[in-house]
Image 1 (cartoon, rainbow, N blue to C red):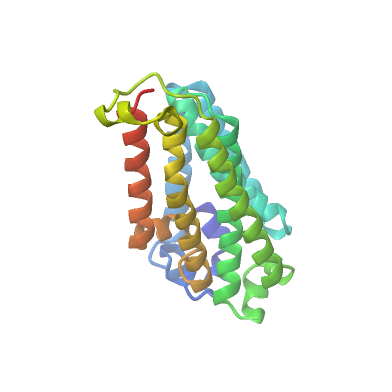
Image 2 (image 1 turned 90 degrees about the vertical axis):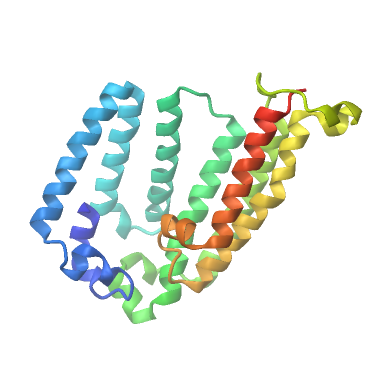
Length: 254
């Protein structure tokens, strides 16, 4: 909400963001500011009682968002990195909340995917806005070219699925699950838990390719949450991937 208040004049020129509650005038600025401040204090209070490191991650996320709103969003490359940093902090907050260790390959996958989503937001903006409108809406769009953003997208999309592939290959077998009857007839090459996780790689690749398709449509990829909830093929992909991972981790034991 704070970012929307700062971006109010620019959002009113945007073909999609002009329909947001604050930009459209449906939500008065004083009320939005009160809700934002109250939400900050309540969330920090609850986070502190949940876990100190969870609180620290949430506080760092808040500081990052404020610095982004005030300065970083106007600096080329740093704007994308700060957006990606927000995604990474969310993952760390979740890990702190349930007190689990993150595999290094999984972390690299998260970093690559976060950068992919952040660049996708900029590429989507460039797709739906004219050159003149893009410059007035966001300063950094003046310096980003379609070719440059396409190169970034390709680089981070490839690094994301490759890091995920290495994560599935090197991830240690979990101490849970039950041996499925049909696994006893399979050779160890196919029956190992690490090999079974690798069958989710094509699903991940499809999900990344589907998201790239949405990016070039332009009107939805500015919000990853909106894409996930609004695109049925992508939502189905995430659900299938989740079911496969749960089935492998909890249904297969080497």
